[in-house]
Length: 326
Image 1 (tube, rainbow, N blue to C red):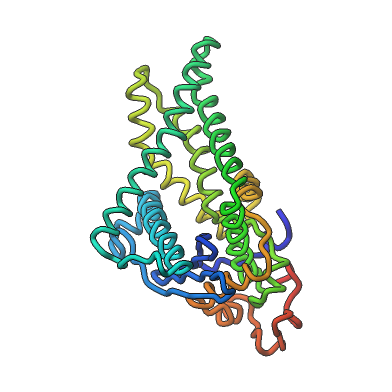
Image 2: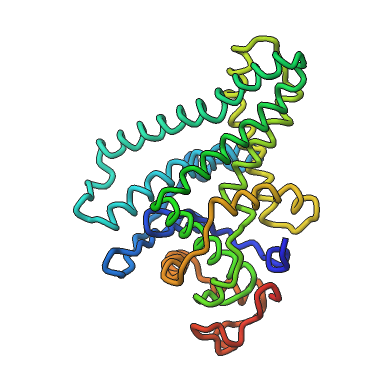
């Protein structure tokens, strides 16, 4: 864990990489910035309230984490589709149409089915086979967890061989660098973002790793002799596991506690695969997306007690605190 990561302040913004661009979200507002083939940056701003937004349910610890996961998946599909339309307007369909919503829903369902089959059923049956051969049923949960992590690491490593995915990972890095830049107290410029880390404790990759680790612990204590019930429990407890993981990752994003930093390590290591160093043009896309939904200058004044304008900071970041010294 480097000095920059330990000195960060929580901003509340988050995002994801999309086709040739970056989406940033701040509260209900979000913006998608995309670099077109002609080199220009196009921007789309909108709002997303989420499931049961504003209700008391969204404030209940653990429970709110499951709804946050649903929101993330739903919004993620939407902005991915938006970015494709922004990059190639000729393929654009009528936004919000019944047909588009149906297709989005079907894609979401199919994604869940594939995820359950690949990351739950496959590791479970493989671990069951191995533990039976070894004659030790206590190894089932541990083997299952290890296999699930290996399957996921193999999956994200395999798809990184695709050119489009490599670029997506670069935009993922640009997203993290922009957020880390301002959360470390640096004015949001290309130079400052470039020297910021591409790893972030609140990343979805870290969330996925927490989900797998939490499941190992949970299923070690929840046992049944029925194979069918084991599978049913693994599916039914997804909301609980995701909710617990959400609380951990939110805590990780707000504290530099040594224990939290320690358990955040595996998720950060995973980001060495799911992020790549972006070029300056990709960083500019990330900056455009941030500035559409977040007043980073007011944030720096509030959190770090200085004004970027008063320091004479320009594109090169002159007068700003050095990385990690905010």
